[in-house]
Image (cartoon, rainbow, N blue to C red; front, side, top):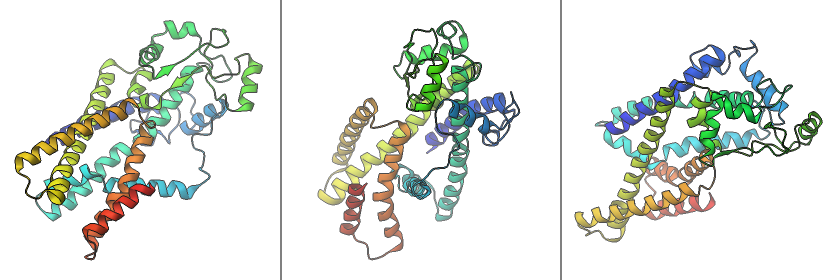
Length: 342
């Protein structure tokens, strides 16, 4: 438990400090969540208005555009909320407190600490997108796109060369004009405008993996090296804390709840320990494969996991708490049905 606390402290510091720096750079406000709705320091116009103007000039949807299907967004948000309540490695944390009242206080403080992270996340995304767009169009969308020479010689573009080596970021001067034009080449109107300006008809920032955004954000904003190192430490802490909790939940569920609880009630402690180790090893292999071959970018994969928890574990958990009529067969059948439809 104290290991998890320490890892959270590293994570939240590593996530918020770069966000504070970037918010100060762009808006003069040290609180990212407030800076998001503040004014852009360079021009005095609202930050979100500035971002909307840039991304629409490049052929993308407005950052603040309203979703056409509000119901879907509400249901998606609800599934993430109840999915969080159904995550096994989160539920296990409630067994580490001594009393029921302590568990309630623990849940309340958990929401506070989660809010610290989640209120910062939208600001991180918006400010990073603004920084990237301005970096690719240093003189604004009415000027010239960034030149290959500038990318090779200006130190503020060093992060692009670093991330290009990972294969998660790439660009190509397709029309040989010595510049890298970044825009939405799926938008016919924007393509026509870019062709008329002589920048070609194809987006030349050919690959930008969204999963690098948080880790690359301090480099994009040209923050000090120690801030970049702090983010790397935070990313590692987040991965280790989540992985440790999940592996513990998986191994104990398979060995104690499934094998000993349902199939071999006379299993010895030694056999239970061996089963837990095997289950943990299998989980690591599967996780490694999915890490190397992800079904989507990080947010999509996380949403899938939360959706599965919301459809399977959460209903069984709630019915087990509030209904005395639920039995093992009904709970298992409901969980299988939830996983199947998800």
